[in-house]
Amino acid sequence: MTETVAIYDPSDDEGRVVGTAPRDRMRRENLPHGATAVLVRRSTGELYVHRRADTKDVWPGRHDCAAGGVLQAGEEPDEAAVRELAEELGIEGAVLTPLSRRWFRDADTWYLAFAYTTTWDGDVRFADGEVADGWWESPAVLYERLLDPSWPFVPDTRSLLEHPEVRRILLG
Image (cartoon, rainbow, N blue to C red; front, side, top):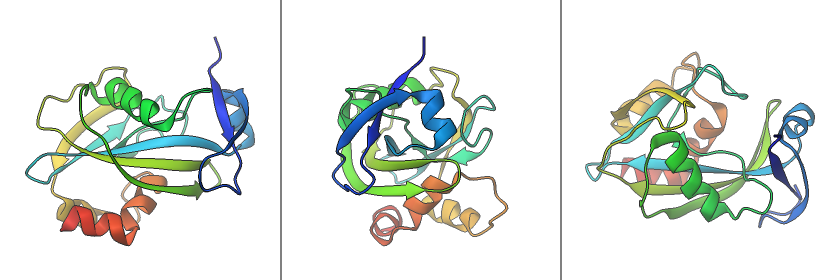
């Protein structure tokens, strides 16, 4: 069965849905859609960084520090973020705090990002096979790694982390 995703109006920063499309068409035509990103932190401040599975449809095998994904047709961003966090990292019951909402676009994807943060000191497990490996990393070390443009890190989360307010929150 083909997944159906919500297509968004790219001129609307609030997230107005204007239609739906099969996921493969959305990817093939780089249609504007909605997606979530959840930055998971320990109470001591470290971020959870992971390597994406080689089977991912966008940026396979690259590193990331946001769990998230595409909003399905009829799905609200908050519920999608909860679903993706459980699917990718096995985290259930975490309290999500909205972080930002902004458009990201490159040659591979075009979406309105609904970003969140959460604090989680429990176990992390790769529930659905979308994550190959992961570890806790100090934000300062992560930002140092991001200075190397050759480090295989996903460009959308790299862009999110470069936002001044996000950087301030993570680095203190």
